[in-house]
Length: 331
Image (tube, rainbow, N blue to C red; front, side, top):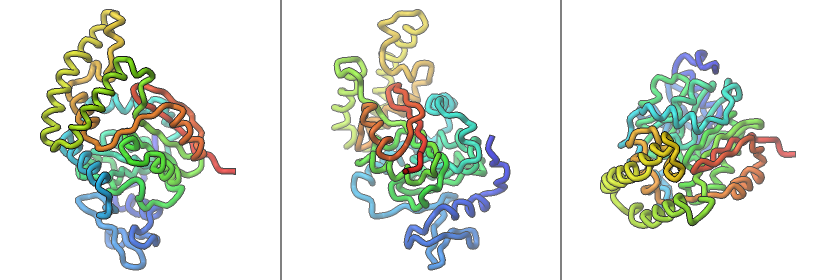
């Protein structure tokens, strides 16, 4: 277990974050004064409803649409759910908790903090970062984690110093950006040497003519329409579609698992077997709403890690790539 007990309050945590953050206006060092972060030139990093705000108003149209999509998603599906722990166990299966203890950590693209709350007790300090209105929910969901601070900002430009973190988690985020590899490289620059990164991105189907391949192709066609729908309308449509998928695929697949019927147990959406319908509804909205979606083969992802001097410690594919990498010093 990490030494988070030494962090007695959020003020002490704020001082620690000031040490690794630069002023977003001028790049100068920050310090805590009267409960705020400010630089020697007088610039203040505002605190809004419990989170630090280093967001920019100069975002491009696609970035704004992406933040609006996820802001709606996580302020609508804002509750803490029992099944989130099982999802976190799947994501973090290849991590050794002893490798996290004592490290400063960044959850890049934290959303409502659904996984940040499981990560926080394992690390020294945690910065939960998101560019959308989801930070308001994350702040509430992490209120009792005294070593966690929520920051609103774009992970591609957030003003942290290089080598600031010993661990970075980035789950289900990069594949929704216009240049995922560039964003990945920026996150790597924030890692200290020997630091670890846990990454999850969508994978390409191994076979286009397969149940998963056909399902993803159908979703791709749907996205031409759904990414342009008002969020409220898409929420209603996602509720209907997820119910159809749950009854026609998830329930039969679960039955096939129990009784050993191979053709049924090989149906897609196995992740949702044994989980409530609401999990599939959330992910259906997620996949149909975000303006951009990329998918990757392992060779494509491996090139990212090679170019960034990251040693891959584990990689597995379960309808997406779960990768743990360690930053090595450049020769």
